[in-house]
Image (cartoon, rainbow, N blue to C red; front, side, top):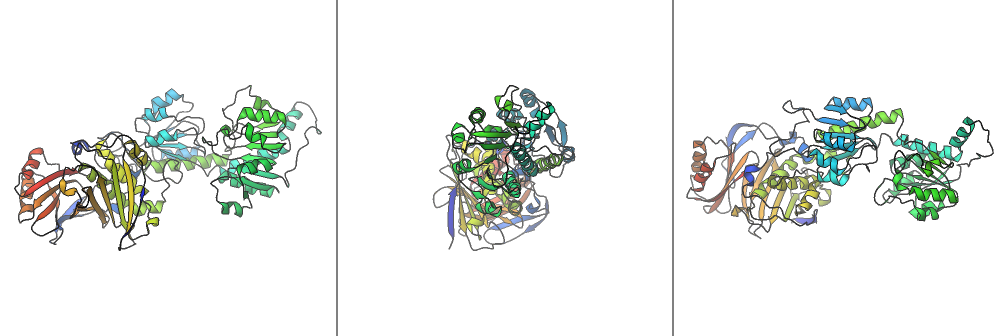
Length: 633
């Protein structure tokens, strides 16, 4: 018996998606590979009956670059950057801040690189419409205006470093632009700098150095504090925080940490206790900040937080300046609540020359040097270059910030089903009558695998892409699929059905159901509830349409498709084939599906060319044909 579970992946918005009555005429071509035809073979089976052509290329060879890529206009297909197709120009990559030569070499091997440093916001907006990728550090603000100015061409923004608070992620997602960062290469450098500031502050190194250079010898003034046995609270226990903990433990410190998302087993493995925010700041002798800047963490270290700290606490920040209310920190320093601070980052960089915080004698400052080692700079350059090149190839990056993290093995396994999902979406939306607004779509995945073991995010995104792109100016990919569906008022729900088939394959079939709409092809309506329903499978690596409404068919999803509902009688294939042949329209396959012998049947005809209006009218006038529809794949 089949078992099912369902989950809703998008929510309602105000305006439903409404197909144009002639949407099949203006649909842009699919961005994935089409398949070459070779010799024809005929099969004479009962239900369905198929006349098919063999194929010389399998969809298992298709790289899933349409998952991430968009196109610049409805008439332009996606450049094949994966194979550096000579029919398309090399992608243009703009580097707006200094990047290591090793990273630039990676970029130059793949695209045309322009290094333009110090661009003003207006200059960046003026330039960005000719760029496929943008690489920045922390100094360039990638605002909504930048994405709007790109006019859809910008496919990826690479942040050479960890923090992405200078990139408008919401705008990037809306425009389908992938944002990637380089979170690992500078981890050790940032941790080392945090420890350097910790020890330098504890022993007054910077102040003593400045004093000596001023001709003074003040040994008694710069007596420090020991680190052994002191409690260090690490606020943010990610990659950098973990590395700081390792080093602090080596200095004999007792380390606690606060991070609502950190796994407890990883903390325990390092001998670190995870505690609540207030407990961390109230018991620590030293506090080291390693949290991202988000709306939740902005100025989280404010007057209230400082009031809860142990008097004489020492503060280190190599994360983001905005997590500290700098005016509140000055007050805490002046009152003695905070004995010292060591800061590498600031709310405004560079800070004003008259900054009270910078001028405090008991504050040690550095100009955002956390990642500034030769090794880290080279590593970050290579890491971000490889991430950007991979994104331009259509690969899913492990460092993507605004796209779901889909493991590479899942992408590889699902690649032929990705093609199937998009084409089913394209077919389904073309079956909707022009005046109907699409509000609800249900996607049913039938599989022999446990529903919890089936990752369908890629497939959902591609169904969404197939439904929305043919009838709107939107370009949909994995980055913006859910957002675009919500904006269009489209509710996508998913259902996973356990079936008795081979668990070797992730999906047995995919069914797309559009509810509460009128259909331009009545036979596509299911018998149960009158919803448009189509279903497909992957056979030998090739996507096939296997059911239209209640009628079984066997159709290779390529080229163009004519669906006819007919009286099930001899000679129908010949009549329609002759009409198409007279107009020099090449037939690639035919399939007839029926539910009861000699009653009604669905004939599916694959054609290489788009028949003209007169040819379609001739098909419609065949006496035994009750309805037909022409669809573009």
